[in-house]
Length: 263
Ligand SMILES: C[S@@+](CC[C@H](N)C(=O)[O-])C[C@H]1O[C@@H](n2cnc3c(N)ncnc32)[C@H](O)[C@@H]1O
Image 1 (cartoon, helix red, strand yellow):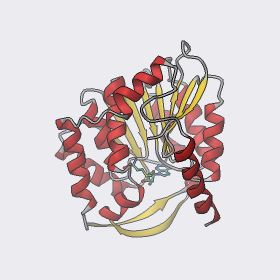
Image 2 (cartoon, protein in one colour; image 1 turned 180 degrees about the vertical axis):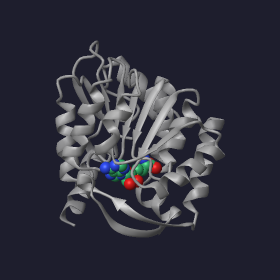
Image 3 (cartoon, protein in one colour; image 1 turned 120 degrees about the horizontal axis):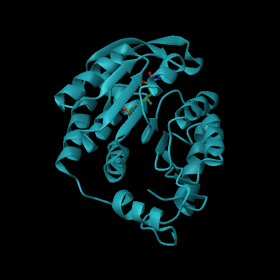
Image 4 (cartoon, protein in one colour; image 1 turned 60 degrees about the vertical axis):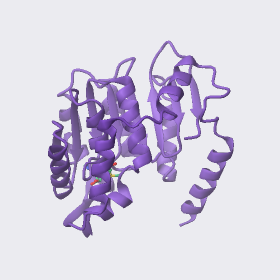
């Protein structure tokens, strides 16, 4: 409860002091181009529109899912009975951030992508629409949610590979399926130690051009701490804080800098 208040204050601070979204005062050509081509890019392609439409359609879904929530420390716990629409409203990317992820993916054109935390497949749909020919594996611990994700992917004729299982148990073997990881979207189990463990595991297949995207970097004290450790990791050169999500770049040719950019 107290942290929700702190979170609101953090958001106000971000809004007041983040660098301008048009890139004023940004000297790095790499970051400036990213802002110009991705963050303020207002173009809605046909593929993005399809992702937005399916998002809108499933937000209204009243289909009830009955499942055991997977949580911190990987112990299956609370029983849940909730509609697909409610799951999307509570835990999926919003259309604004879904579009951002689509544009980021389209801009960098990663060939090998991993998503941790499919839920019912909304962010997965945005990613797959951006690069339909790339390899995309998405992992989810709750089978009932993953079934919906598969339905959405087949409606959009996407060929995402979905894997049902606990990150703690299967992540290492899933990573082995990759030659390299061009892009990873971390959006499940927002606990400090788990997040850092997944980050370290994915680092093994990262390379100079890899991009790691972390959701909910300010959501809790634990996530704040994890984000700080990740930003300061010796392999990380540029980090961009967009409040709801954080972007990590390794590119050695860039000078080490942390940006907070209004989005
Ligand atoms: C925030 S939701 C993902 C939302 C999704 N990326 C989207 O934007 O549509 C996080 C998901 O991670 C799953 N999850 C959490 N901890 C997990 C774990 N240890 N192993 C597998 N899945 C897990 C949860 O079941 C939940 O569906």
